[in-house]
Length: 141
Image (cartoon, rainbow, N blue to C red):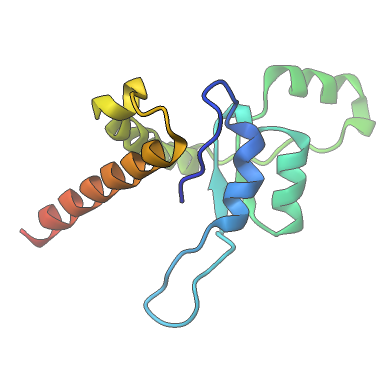
């Protein structure tokens, strides 16, 4: 699932829209729309993102920002519970980071030569397809 935004826009506001469009195909039945857990870096640690995940019963594997931690502790018992954080599960997030780096290894994507959003998005889909096909050929050999 790729969602194109303005170049200077932050990723965090797109967290919920991307999560709502997510579909995971299974061997049988309809695609899943609710993962067991979502791992993200501190940029996704907002109260709104965590509340959305809680409402959908999705485990958040997102570290707490230092300022959020300090504010929560400053409030004492009114600050709520500490966030649940699984460091081992968080390490899996590295897979996504490596994929993004592979996408950016293609010069057209890294430098954003395509000024048209449609052609840039098409390039992202093409590059993602190439990475996926390369993984398939490795898996069959």
